Amino acid sequence: MELAAKVDALMDGLRDDLERLAAIPSVAFPGFPAEPVGEAYDLLVRLLGEAGVEHIERIDLPGTAPVIFGEIPPPSPDAPTVLLYSHYDVQPPGDEKLWLSPPFVPTPVEGGLRARGIADDKSNVIAHLGMLRAYEGRPPVGVKIVFEGQEEYGSPFDDYPRTDPERFACDAMVIADLGNLRPGTPTLTTGLRGACEVVVEVRTLEEPRHSGEFGGAAPDALLVLLKALSTLHDVHGDVAVAGLRREEWTGTTYTEEEFRELAGVREGVPLIGSGSLGERLWSGPAITVIGLDAPSVEHAASAVVPYARAKLNLRFHPRQDAREAQDRLVEHLRSLRPFGIPLTVTPGDTGPGYEATTGGSAYRAARTALREAWGEEASYVATGGSIPLVNGLAQAAPRAEVLLFGAQDSMCNLHAPNERVLFSELRNTVVAMCAFVREYAAGFRAEGAS
Image (cartoon, rainbow, N blue to C red):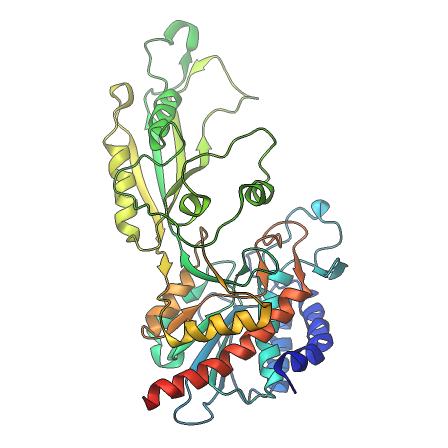
């Protein structure tokens, strides 16, 4: 049977299993019950076994939900091994009043289903299962399966894989924790911006002082902080911190109309920064003030503010070293003396970016596979979000090609109310994964024979 027809014959069962999985509130955050996470784990172990995975292990790491590890040996000595990653835990639903239907009641929408976690990342879990079913548990490659149970809250895969490299050894890996730029546009994500945090604070007075009696000479800590923060961007809104890498983006990106709708930009409000959206979002830096300690307007007193603090989030170029990027921001802030007053600057957490090497046989196979599934050439994009586990897995298998694609799309409302997945994207992702392992096995053997 033709590959696409075989997948089409499986889709009813895959949809049913996606609904069963999405109905389980497998939130691994503190304060949420652990039983649903265990229920999702048990369901997936059963589904993997039914799909022909005979070797399944439970990995228990300190302070985290269990990881499912499955393995199918290569069918021949000259066949490659592919690691398949996705996660079965989900984000909390947030304010349920903003949902059009209960978040853990999978509900039909036009062309798909709505539920928390149905796109991120349970659709991709099901896509992996679909590939295994299409090959009746005997794919043309060796397979290692990693279904993580706590990716959304403190993933152990940021660090753990490098401590157990033999387990994660492979020739290529498909990390399915994202998807297409837009529905119907096959997309390979080749870059992830890194992230770090910095806290800057100002203390000028022992306590508040009457603004009428002291204002004008007594140093206002909030004014000092605001003057410092205003130096982080130029008049166009571009980051003005020296040493942060920025390059032209040559891949595909959003139209401005798509981005405005996705970001919820109010009518008449311009976007900030200059250059292409890809450059602003993916191959250049971004600094966001994510927290501010200052008197609230509602409880404001007529007093000079003695203390103010801000927390900054920096996103930086995929190839820039995380510590270097953070150091550039810290140095910029420490060099300032707004009104002659020094700032206290404290560096926080860092997470590296990632840029894939795209010239190998796995990428050639993936481009062919995505073209077969969607009927058009794959686009290359990056993402401004960080997925540190990519580096963790890549460090465990440094020679493996890393591919990032899946059944989500950027309009699926992941982490937001009314998250949804489209059946067309799920179906095409299963076809693409099936075609990928077929093409990769053939190309790998051909390279080995040459």
